[in-house]
Length: 441
Image (cartoon, rainbow, N blue to C red):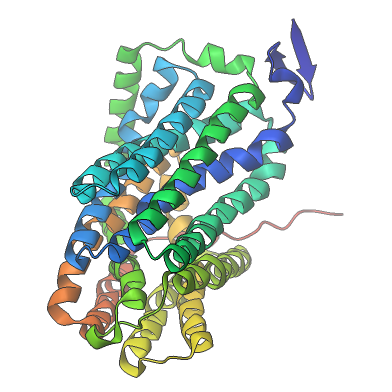
């Protein structure tokens, strides 16, 4: 039995009667955001609370970017092996297993090595889930629905960021304070996350629709996909201005890539060694609420600004906005304030600047990907984007421990120079990014 709903054909299934996009888009994109923030942010704070050195934290958690760096290489095979729907529910089960594995291993003496292994499972499962979820979104919805729900999916992805960086960190901090046992507190926190993904797995197993178009996509053979991918990959590196473009992708967030690894340790470390001595709960409040709100506002305002004057006009201003607000951390390391509101304000300034400045980066990736194979080329660009975060982040902890926090943040400001040096060589169409005026007469 088949059901026709809003122009889409779905197989009769336990989930087909609940194929309304509102039933699965919010939960799907919330589930997409949580494992990323767990691997990139929660892990850093947890390891810091468990007294792992900054050098080791930055080095090993930066390696977790690797699945997103190489994601374009295995994305073509997601369609061949199974359907995107199958990948989504399977990866959610594996993500839950990875989170549970972290929780089980935390009490053991070799917890650092053991939990890192499960974070690797989590990271690869999350990157694969991203591929499948974004592809499924385009298959299960028509073009008008895709346009309507793009804001909804972004909103719930942001809510996942708030929940991961805020609510879960606050929960861990509350448990630390009430139980007096740091490892137990983080065990409970990760068990909560694992339980959440078990719920996601069961829910999406029955609720996600089964678009007929997905079954027809699997007709390509592995050999054909490899040939097409090889041609697409080669054509990317034949684009005009490829060297400058890659340099821009790798260097635009050079300072931010190092700052993001040391920001939470700086807030958590004691004042005796140059930190601000905040509690886990306070860090959760700063990054999970104030920080995310400022970041989101910066992104929204950046998007509006770019749509009015175009990328070429804003590229310099946005590049300055993503680098100079790092002065907020330099100020915090110099003044060592105790006023919690002042600390929140400084972080909000930096996060707003990052959100505003990041708009130019994403627009440039879209601009450089234009032309034949633009979807595949954009995926390759995102791989370079992840690499631009991974490589600098790996040495951030070593630099900080060698320099101290104040001089490390001075170095972060110096790292803005390569970003600004690349921009004059970029070739950007003056009209790109501008919102086209519609004819109304």
